[in-house]
Image 1: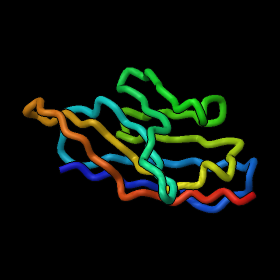
Image 2: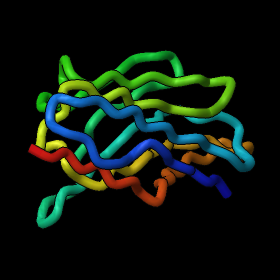
Image 3: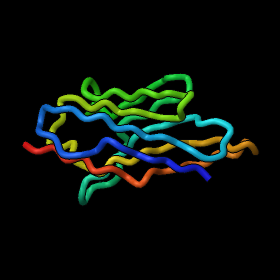
Image 4: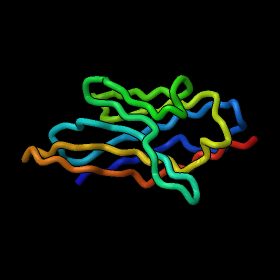
Length: 120
């Protein structure tokens, strides 16, 4: 089993910054992809950013140029630096990991979510 523990959410004024962290623990062979999704009230969960084990990144258009995803493979941790935050960034942010087990089977895991609230 794999656990994802998020931290770093909170309340910030528009234009401010926050940094989210997500650490993976448990038994696995490798983590292929780590990323962040978000879900605002009344909306579907959407991809924010993701990063492969090799460092390739992918961002939602709405956050390009403002958010930066990074990863420390040695610590099995992914980070999301969020700058120039907007009220529309308000959501619960979920960490995601696509994990390869020792059996080489692939599974998806989710964190419990962390609230990000941006006030105008």
